[in-house]
Structures are given as C-alpha cells and as structure tokens.
Length: 348
Image 1 (spheres, rainbow, N blue to C red):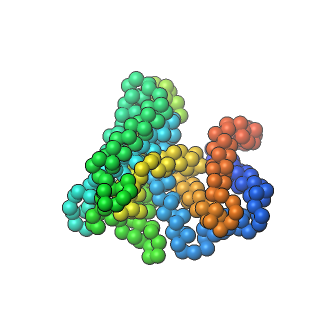
Image 2: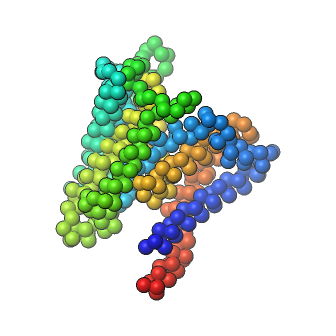
Image 3: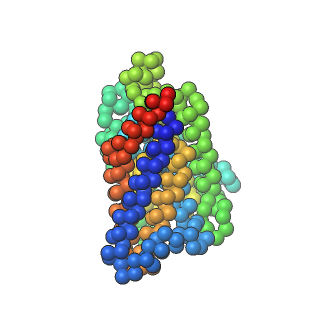
C-alpha cells in the first residue's frame, strides 16, 4: 500500500514536470528572451512580499473548493456543482453583509454561516436526486450552476445593485462584515486560518471516523458497501451536504475577505478549478494545501510574465490542460504501477 501511494506521488510529480517542460518549450519558441521570461514565471512570485501574498490570497478559495470537490470525488461522485454554490453563497453572504447590523466578529461569522448553510442545502438537491433516483450528478450539478448563476445575477441586478457606482456591483458591505487582514502589507485574511482548520477537520473526518470510512467504502464500491450494511443513499446525501457547506463557506469567505462589495457579474471559476486541485491532491484533504498553492503560484507567475515579458498569460491554460489530460489518463505510467504491485505481492 505504501508503494502504491509512493507511485501516485511520482505520477503526479511527473505530470507537473511534463506540463512545465511543454510550457517552457513553447515559451522558448515565442519569446525573444526565453531565459528571462522563464525566470520571471518561476521566480517573480517570490520576489516581493506582495507577490507572495497574491499567491496565498488566490490559494484560499482554491483550497475551499478543492476540499469540497475532493470529498465528492472520494465518494465517486463526479459533481461539479461547487462553481454555482461558491457564487450563490457569495451573494447570500453579501446580502447579510449589507443589510445586517452586528458588532465585531459576529457579523462576518453570521454572514459566512448563512452562505455555508445555503450552500449545503443547495448541494443536497443533486445528492438526493442521485441517492433516490440515480440521476447523473454531473448533469444535475452543471445545470444547477447555470440556475444559481442566473438567480444570483438577478438578485445583484434588481435588489443589490448600487446605481451610484456606475457598474454592476452591489452596495458596499458594512465595515463590521469584513474579515480581518492577518499579514500587514498583503490582503491575506482570516479566511486562511478558517480553511486550514477546515482541512484538518476534513482529514480527521475522512480517516478517523465511522462516517468517513463509510464514505470511502461507498466511493470504492457502492454495491459492495450496500451489501456490507452501509446505507449508501445516506452517505451520498451526507457528502453532498458537507461538500456544499465547504463550497458555500469558500464563496462567503472570499467576498468578505477580498472585496468591499459584491462584484461578480460572471461565475468566478473557482469551483471548476477546485476539480483540478482535487485531482492534483488525489482527493487527499491535506494534499489540497500544496495543490492549491501550486496552482495559485503558476497563475500568479503567468500573470507577472504577461506584464513583464512578451508572452501572454494564456500560457497557463496550456499547463492546466496538459495536467488534466495526463492525470485523467489511466494508462499513464500504469505499467510501473503494475510492476510495483507485483513486487509488493511477492514480498508479502
């Protein structure tokens, strides 16, 4: 078992190296100064305190959605509904941040709780459809993304919009609703602490509790789990509730930590990015931290590269596409995995 896990680490590392090598090859072909450009991409995110802060700021929502999606994937639920829930929960948190009057830490706590609970309830709908009627969770979750975006945009345009702002944005949040900044000179906020605690709790839940065991068994083989006495329908609904709660918390934390008013006129993309983070982390909650930081790092690097060199930031799309293709390819390095399994079996 240890050797199999070691193989997965090697496989993921090989995927990342291949993706970066392809990106560097393309940079060398299109850039007049390829060495300088690659140096900017790799090192510039670490050059200043502000740039390091940018990486961590971007990683926070990726951790929330990556954790949410990883639990769903672990239960063998290919659900991509975190995108719509992240957006709509941000709308809910914004409503509470604008209209509630509370003091100190209570205001953001109530707003985040409201967005999280709404996210859990919304996520339960595809879960119930899957558990009771075996509806395809990919289809229902993607449709829910469109529905939630439409409803959220309607609320923004007709109930939250500040006409004096001359843009499609909400009224400003009350000062008491903002999350506190924890690193001077950056926008890193207390959402970082929240998501790190949530990741540890998710790890303990998944590997140290009976419910986590049932979730993993249901994901490994739903029929076997059901014949073993596990109520798989209950497990499916439970994991959707938990995942929706996490995605909803992520959307709420993001708007209260990074903005002074709600201003998403389109889906922010963090939910779909969460699927990539979960794939890189191999659905391991603790590995979500490194995966989110890596994805945030290369995105900040690509943005700085676009500003300081002659290569556009769209280069990052190539890296992401190669990573997804290779990770999703079951046959990639499978021969090595089979050799490791045979060797381990002989030793046993």
